[in-house]
Length: 398
Image 1 (tube, rainbow, N blue to C red):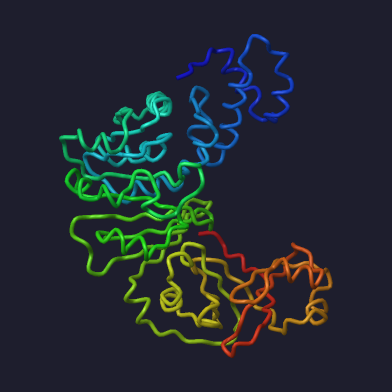
Image 2 (spheres, rainbow, N blue to C red; image 1 turned 90 degrees about the vertical axis):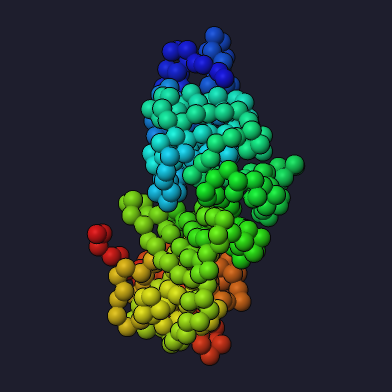
């Protein structure tokens, strides 16, 4: 692992806000410094500034390649994951840059960070010491080799399998990830009381549950309304009524959470209605988890259409887990009518269960993006395409 001199560290800190491309062009000004290597560190810190502030703000932290930083968990999702489990020993079998291990170490007496890439393992170990995580042991090994040689017993084994194939293409099936969790499951249960598995949000949840069989809880996690990951808690005795949690982590540090079961979702009967005084759009975690009926029942809302996943009410529901809008009116999908309602020719658009895309609608109508008006293009309960004119409701912070 590369160790940087005080002068090299100063160069990094002094140029954190500079364009990496510009710095490379000016490399000849610093003939005594390894500018290409230092620029990679600057670029990694720039990418990590919002995602990993604990690492990005420490002057002595060393970063791996930018790709590794992009693939790692954010601090927000890592902290939430760590809140779900606790105990004496957790083994992170796919340790990577070590963000998840760092936060798990706050909940466990000891964490073992297993990483097959030697340089990345050394970087993680170095950074753990810098950041005061003394209860993390870093090992350079594959997950499979570690499990074969591990004679102890962990409370939890954590895996975030690599979601890239041999040609670096993205893959979304469990059997196409490395390590192959499906093959390892019997061995995993021999070595731990529970397994916490992270998968891509692109992976089909129902297919994963069918393949895994031993899931007892599932969390769909969104960060600032962008779905980031799905977590499966696996235990030797599968749950008879598996709980699903849709969690959206908000910028202010709070979260929106909704819990339901598949049986509740399938057996729930919802009401359908035309748009009322308020319109609600669920956050991405609820949409990914499939809580389409459950969210209507838990928040006493009517649905516009079985496939639209938009909700409405006469009275404001202030704690709804998603975006809330005040309805200004409902109209036809008709260019002249739409332009008459939008003198500024600007609006924010969303399509839900509608035959055309936002790009198509903008091309046909000439309506630009922006402004205070929000248009929802959807289908009503009578199968007719409609346009709902809204203004966003800004709720007071708690």
